[in-house]
Image (tube, rainbow, N blue to C red):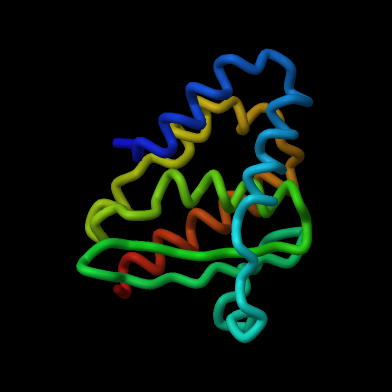
Length: 135
């Protein structure tokens, strides 16, 4: 049930055999993302459980889930960009049914992130799922 934008990431990852190249791609995706407005970097949008500072700001437009995010760590900004490709634009009721672990596993991220980064990624996914429940 992955978004077409996420499928593009999967396809790009298939062509990159070296994990350093994949990390660079994730970091570049984060660099390409617009920064989150400082006014939105508040305790309510901060994600706990991440080693770095992470903020996610959700919004629903026409029944579709969208979010912006930011982090003070470049790799984490890239992970936010990956999550945006996975979730952004889904119908709100579809967000919770995404098997993020399986989808991200297609990228091999589960095997190549540190324990702290994996915990942070899990915290971001849980925050996204939580947002969709209250929207």
